[in-house]
Image 1 (cartoon, rainbow, N blue to C red):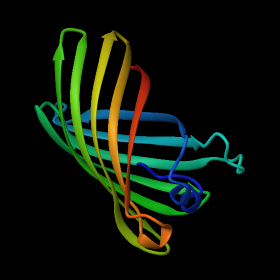
Image 2: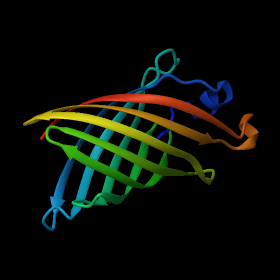
Image 3: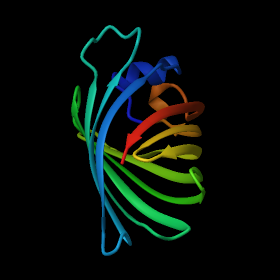
Image 4: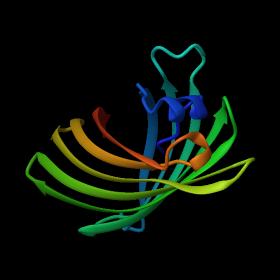
Length: 168
C-alpha cells in the first residue's frame, strides 16, 4: 500500500522519500489456482524527524495459473497510526525461460479512525530473472495519489521503482 508515515506533513509538502523492508510468504492452493500470502512491511522515511518507521501487516488472495490474475491485498498499519488499506488489482505476467515480464493495475483505499477514502491508483511494470531458487526483480510504477482538499491539493503523481530479491 502506498501509506506514508506522518501522512499529513508528507502530503502538505508534496514530497516523500521512502525505503521499505518487507518479508512475505505466499502459498499456492488448489493446484496453484489460488494464491494466499501474508507479510510484514517496515517503512522508513529518510529525513523525517520520527525515527521509528511505519509498520504494516499484509494479507493477499489472488488467482494463479491464469494470464490475467485478479487479487486483493489488505494492509493493516499498526504504527505510528492505525489504518486499513485495501488494494484490489489485476495483473498480467508472462515467463520467457528464466525471464518474467508483468503489468499490474491497482486501486487503493484507506480506512482509518477519521474517514474512508479511495486514495491512489498505480500502474506498474516489472521484470525478473530467476536462477532457482533465487530471483532478482525490478519494477517501475506510476502512482496517482488522491488527497483530501483540506491537505492542500487534490492529487499528485509519483514515479517510483523497486528492487527485489526472492528466494523460492
